Amino acid sequence: MSNDHTLGRQSDHPTHAPSAAVDRVRLDETFDALSNRRRRDVLYYLHQANGETVDVCDVADTMTAWEVECLDDVEPDHFRSLLVSLRHVHLPKLDDIGAVSYDRDRDTVEQSDSPVIHDWVDLAAVEELT
Image 1 (cartoon, rainbow, N blue to C red):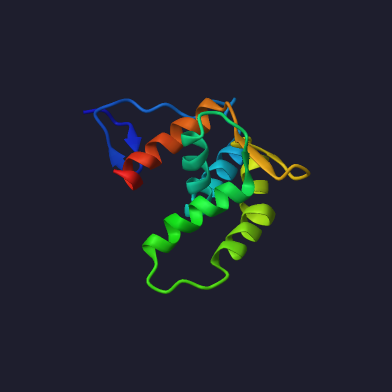
Image 2: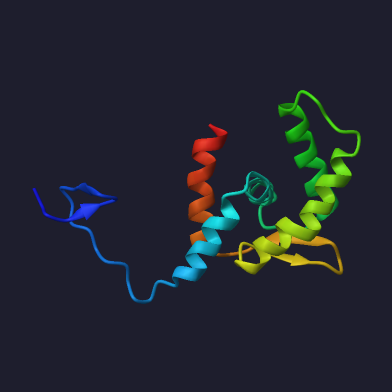
């Protein structure tokens, strides 16, 4: 057994120190952005859109349906509240990490071509959607 440790446990597999090229701040920002369910739902929606640019209202409409299905008590203004949070919080944060391209003027969003983001979202989808 090796003397290397992974997450505080001894491992049979050697571990490697993070590359100096790893941008830890960017990695932290990516994990922070993906820690929110609504932001992951945006990415799931955009994955289903197959690279098309979509209207933010369409995203909010679908996400409202997803959330209402899961909630016992739905606020009358659920759609409006979700739309505001998408425009002012979630989409800008996803745009900042390069997960989406959000056009505020046109009120549209599209999935980025970031393979790293896609890999993390694919892993999350396996856990959440299956």
